[in-house]
Image (cartoon, rainbow, N blue to C red; front, top):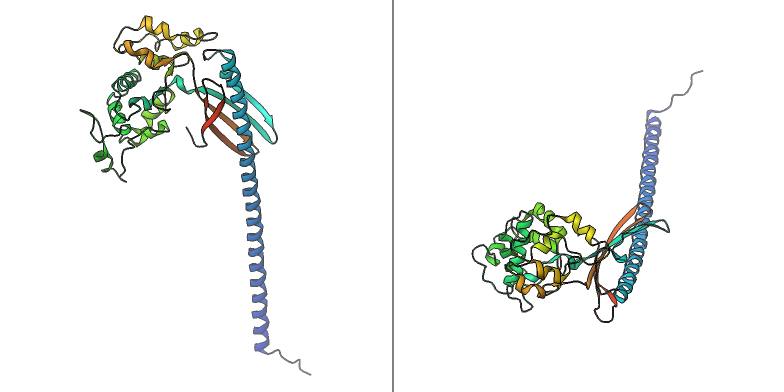
Length: 319
């Protein structure tokens, strides 16, 4: 008695069904893997956003803490110098899920780039002269003082012989125009053609962008900034360590000290540009929450009369 043979068609049908089943299982596996991956990614993204939100709030706390120090300092001291409590860096302090640290800088201890123009928007020759001196102190080309003055002033006439107005900037790729007004960040120097990052990094610790007419606090300014106030002065920039020691417990040099020691060009108008106290400070708060890190920069203004401290600007990018 012979065994009945299976039809070729039935075998093929079972083969197709098997392949279909395998494909369905493979697609289901891929789909499940993708859903799991997306879910994990979304959880990590949500966690990172939550951590950054928390870090921002911690940064605001550090900002408020620094503001309270500055207000207390104004109520107890008539000058601002590096030996005071506000200038002491905040060591790493534990917070929920991480830590915060930071420091306060006197931004009036730097050269204010906006002082290259007057409040009316015209070029300020004295400010340009001082900036030329600072550039020379740092072995940078003095021509950038004239170019920056043109970037800031309201007219469209380039300084002679090395100024630059819209005709220079509109020929760039992509084209743009001069600011023709005060800047809010020293990094705008990078908009000057061929200025470059290397020059900016060299100049960055000595410059700031504050309202036009803001004075330099000589009690906190680096020696190069102080010497730039008068042509040919090299009294303080050559001994930064000695300068730091002198400032441990009092203001040095005082405005009167400079009046007595500087006799070069610019010394006759010195009092218009220097002071021994400060209104503008910057708080740098470095916050770590879990694997998330944030640096919050807060520019604070302390009122001369009420001593109230308020934030003027906050930013999160590099300075």
